[in-house]
Length: 125
Image 1 (spheres, rainbow, N blue to C red):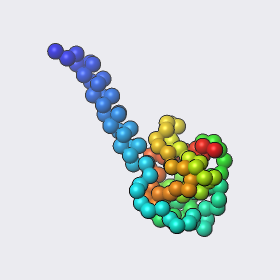
Image 2: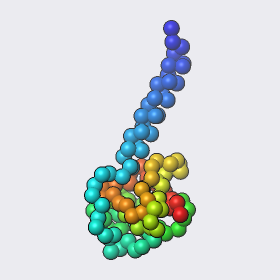
Image 3: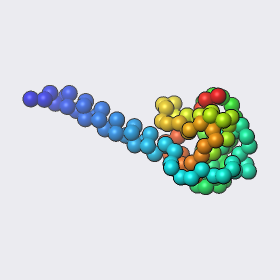
Image 4: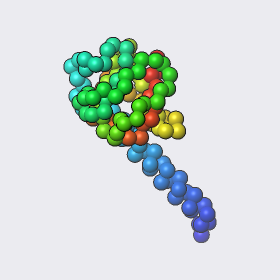
């Protein structure tokens, strides 16, 4: 016979693991085609976040190499372009500062990103 307290703890652990997996998958880059060139408002050396898909309505651009809070109003859709030094990655973190996923090394992008669970980005320079 299974101890009811242990069973509830195991159930909570499995639900939490499933939720973390869903968040990681929702913030991972999509397989959408990469743009031929960076958007005009995302200069070399920056990671740029957009409020809308297809690199529309710039929400922020970060150049510094530390964890930075993204501005309010990014919503649950959006997009991003990593135009930093070749190979530089950017990590995505939730409101507690817990790592969710990362953008591939520059240059890289996601025309259909998901800012919903993301509160911070960190350029790993």
